[in-house]
Length: 114
Length: 116
Image 1 (cartoon, one colour):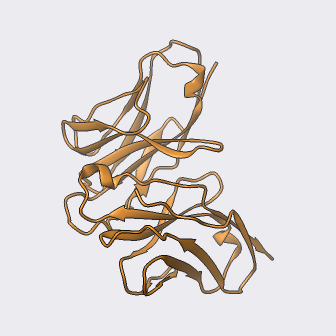
Image 2 (tube, each protein chain N blue to C red):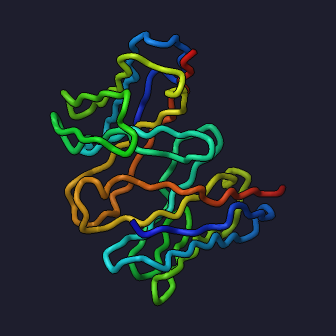
């Protein structure tokens, strides 16, 4: 599976935008880019996913580089509730049932400062 | 409310005493799976199921069993628990079968298991 690289930790001030980077230089043409987050003492939670184009939803935006070798999760206004570990995960769109497995790396621990 | 539930949330048991952790989802999802989360190792998949009566091993299946007799339930069974199975366990579910692997997975709240 193609791997992702994320910074171990980041800090943001409350109500400021946050840009969480992810490098995936070995991504294949059929890999989707997924983001999940895990709040303290909770299970992982889906945030957003995309293939080639930038994506927006109620939680965040996903900006994907033109060569798809990197992406950025954007939280437009960080709140204290956004403090979590954020995981960038690649999933093969043409894989079998095994591709439904989410391979979690270490992720980026986001701290939000009041 | 769409959700994945797990029971119990916390369990302390002794080596060798069989236990079952239940998982249930109310979204009519075909795909269900179990993960364990350990410090420094992240989340690792134990077993998964694509539908009723269809299960397969994940990355760390040793010491675990599962069954899928009903679509909504996917229990995790530890026949003879050992201390190295002390961990935080998560059940997850999603739709299955669509080409777009954008099907988000929903995770339960977790079960913290301690085996002494």
